Image (tube, rainbow, N blue to C red; front, side):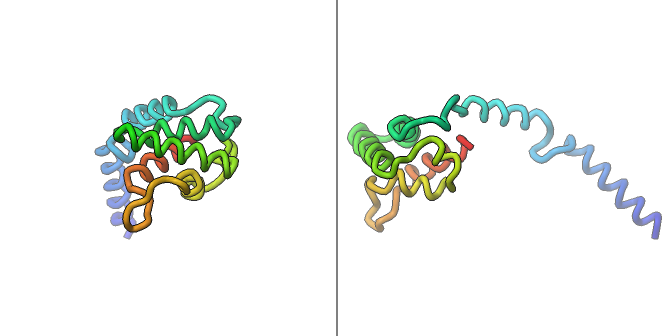
Length: 131
């Protein structure tokens, strides 16, 4: 029995060495991921007023859109942020999905009545990156 346990321990040690001791192939990737996180951080975001939050979110949400859709989405985000008083503190303390729903409450919908997937993904990615 003891030799079986030793074999399992040795196999675990060999596996740990084979993948450089971490998920994703080693320590180099973790450092790269931390650098990206630092670049996305906005100093003082916690103290942003609704207009500032709307500006930053709209900038991220409108990437790759046609000009007239950018203007409509930016207006909708500014209106929702102002109506719901969405501050930087609220963004950081509330669930990302709830904040996203509030920010996009007046935006354009698909024929099924849902928020377009690309817009939803970009806003959620940004809100989660701010945490």
